[in-house]
Length: 270
Length: 270
Image (cartoon, rainbow over the protein chains, first blue to last red):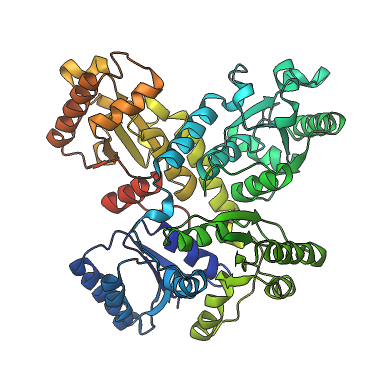
């Protein structure tokens, strides 16, 4: 039977989800997960405890609970349920208190950086990225932290958005299109910002599949056209010594992390 | 002295960062953090170990290492450094193995859901959200999972993008502008999708500050105008029985989690 999993928090439960998901993904089986955020009152906690216990009675298998509950009273109630309890926060907070010689001062939701400055950096970065997506304007390239280049549908937009959302990085992106292919070169605005350029490439077969689901049986989506564009753009990257990664089979997180790793770009958050 | 922290992984290190950040945010002190991803070879691990040990020699304080290293050989090398080692993954994997009676089969990077279907859901959701941002078109509202409403600059766009990026949810958003205020009502395309509507509101003072940094000393950014718009829009939410949350002082993660919690909207990822 599919094991039942609860992600519980007195905050958003996003940390509990990420934590639990990372642990569970090490197992080659399926889980059935339910996220329960904002358990910030005794009565709510009692209800969740009941829900967990009911689940145990119904399934006859102990549910798995991943939580990051800051409030000790709430935590104790969940802990008293029939679940097997994986307490992400406190497992590590106590040893760290000892090492640092500093008492923890738990604050709910501090994990997501509500600090005003960090928040505004992030919103600025998201707005910058939206305004400078897909080469729609070239006049703000001087303000970019990074400029992603590549053929249409290779993953530039999601990667740019992830960089801005997760790390507060101003990421512009610029597409090379079919019309550029005859005489492919860098526009002058990009040349001026050469040190910020970073390429994405993709296997032509995968690009073909992605474009097919967008514009079926078009010239744009043909395997032949995908091959030509990828080849030309990779040649440009090499000629201009622009670092690049192959986005095929990588998640947006992995692409973003590879870009940070290869460029040494500083995170503006965390 | 500011404690030194390393986030290390043989994958993206994003999980290690989130995990470490959540733990450290419980302490009322500053940390100096360095992320080192993709430590996927013995030589790389030996270099990082040396870097950690050098840091210890320089600072005379044991560095803190948060890691989520899947490969056991790599993990042992980092573990043998002078750092205090917080091993996020294995602390929880072993007890879970016992409980489930299933051996873990560690796969690097599986934590970020490379499964093709999940990936495509997410890209589709991001593209949908970009195409249906800021009321630029109303013709795809039937395909939305949720439609966020609110005044300009109350946080609709970052919240929509977070919902699509993190949870694979198709989130459209629609702004009410100054011109709407005299006779504020729902456009027919929104009325048709009433069950998908969700409001964001914000304190007028905070809205005023945000708009000032965008368009200083304009009518648009005046406290008076902000007050009028927020009041009118909140009245509309109440009249039309549209659920809403106040976005002031909340991170994008919190707003997104509140929306999921209040609507019961299903995550398409995780």
